[in-house]
Length: 192
Image (cartoon, rainbow, N blue to C red; front, side, top):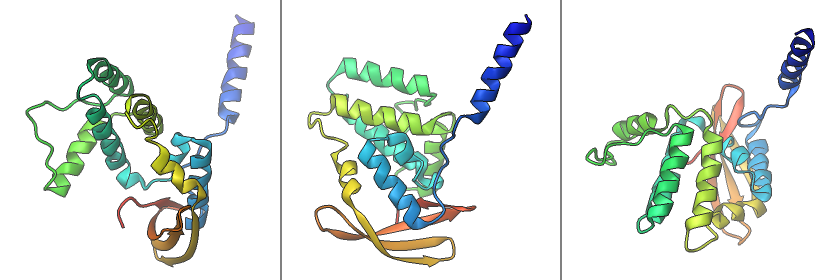
């Protein structure tokens, strides 16, 4: 009994010392670099942790919609997707309940209803990407995300808890990228 308690105490101590992945980063530039590195490594959990927490359900919703489209004519893939979502705690909405796309507040509430019980949203995001890669006809679904691996950031302007910078993609296209600060951490914004 004493050995078992000692082993358990050691396991608890090791778990407490295990590194945890923090969300966001200390500066807009740091979260951008973190996103870039996560993309290079195809570490989609870390990528997800760079996104504004207020928009995380929207990101999952978009992925769920994409996964749903892929399963349209594939019953096996549909069953696999349902199992994946059930494993993560995604709540399935009734078919008769329409998603209120025209009302932002109701849409946000609907997304919270669907994804609010998910314990590990970064893992769900990574599983959605893996599902899309497996079942998409293009087989390069993550390629659009991977393009950001070669991107550069410049001209970051901070205004309180918001920031905007110029992102140059690997193909030379320049676009604005927005950031938002929550507490002491900066995150990428999905909406500008």
